[in-house]
Length: 499
Image 1 (cartoon, rainbow, N blue to C red):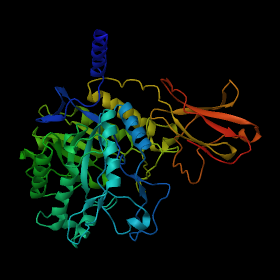
Image 2: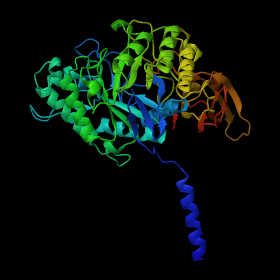
Image 3: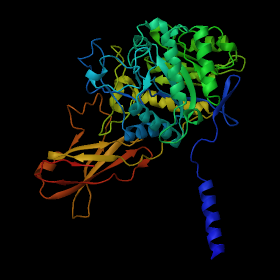
Image 4: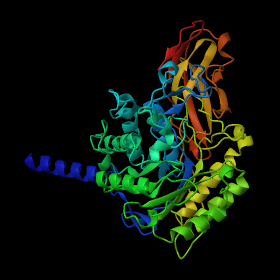
């Protein structure tokens, strides 16, 4: 008996040891290159800013915000985070840069906006983290590791959209420019936020953030174009002291911070390419690489809002441009939005430019935004970054989640990460045969607003009698998913059957 127990224990040990439960290595830097263990690490993708906080596009602008442009925001559900991260990972994304930690604004309460950084509890004190929002941040990190996605995490924004340096300075009666003054109270608060975040213990994984291998790098902030050598050096030193195994990105914008190239605490020099600042060009890749001279890794953290032809030339430059053997480690096209919890996608409009967010795996409905061409370019560029000629075929999608079958046959479901279309089926509750209600429904509806329009209506439902089951199956070019969960619908009743 003892021999059998011992043998079983050995077999179980072998089985568990063969399963990967997370990353083996931190991402490291040697000169201008990044490595995962001994393997060079290069990446490309669509920038996903909202894995931890969502612009609630269906609600639009908050009239209670005195700035006259402040929007509604909310925190994503766990299902949304998991769906988006899977969509990224399964379409070839190895790394992802998200957006900043949001800073409180006086009108947040009136607009019901959750933020990450709250005002000091006492006048003149240090800001505090919003635990509710940070648990969502914890979950993002845990899901990223589970799905093999490395994260680049910036701290504070130069801009006001989410609440940035101006809102932080307002806690102390200082100005937005005081953020860059290393002697200011705002700068002191900025560093205290960095300490609180990096030393936080993840409520999901049980690890301190500085021990999370899913965190590839910390970035000083988003588009910090007022960065000075003293500001960057002091901040990079603090980050490296707190998180010696994780990389540091200088989050300056349009220029290289003087001194950063010779600062041992900085690993990655970043730039963003946009037409309004005059650098949205493949030539910028060459100029930046030449200026860096192989002393640091080089990343284009954001670029886009241009036609596909120009987007392609910049992607090609990121893959191939070499200055004395040094190339970019990665780049991200702006920007991605994911599935809603109850169906359809979130959408973001880039001002009056006509450009909108992109969605995976790409949908023909968004032809005005060239979405299919952009997603194809991204996957091809990912393959080229790894020395391959072509991207691997998409995997068949996983099962969607059927959320509700409402009165008159209104159906809500959360789409699968790789689903391009969906087959909706129905059968009598006591029957054996599933009938196809619609064979090829797409949830890539442009500017879908769930407050105004149901995702799908079974127009044949009102003529039915009795009880029925519904299910949904996701389809893409590689196959179809297992069926979703089923929900029961009773003809003639108006009560929602919810998951």
